[in-house]
Image: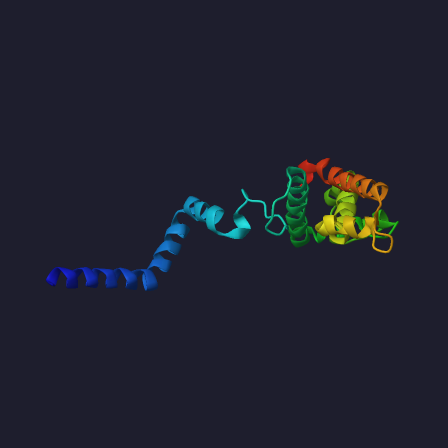
Length: 186
């Protein structure tokens, strides 16, 4: 009986430790040992799990071509969200104004280096801008969009030419992102 009560007391002490003290000990360990912090973050904090791509697909079977399309745009979406945080997004960089270069030149908060960088990378930003707005409007639900656009409920016919045209547009948007893959950093 004495052994059982000692074991129960040890278990109780362990529970109290994990309930009250473990969090502080663990956080101090992470603070004192930065590689430990990143080891932990890369495995358990969703924002820092860079080895995973979260696809915006419902649980189901998908062919590789579908998964690849959504993976490209999932990574691109993460990039755009980071760009919004750091540089105001591609709407800010590209702008809708045809005289945008003049607008940038007159901005007080943009230095000359940044201005030249934006001008050099203007094609990249424009492609990202177009691909992003296409993704928001059509791409996230592209399979549903194709079905809705190509199927005529009145006649019950399916327009294969329209489907091919939409898939060509899909390939063009993927290429807009993939052609500038080295620019996917903030």
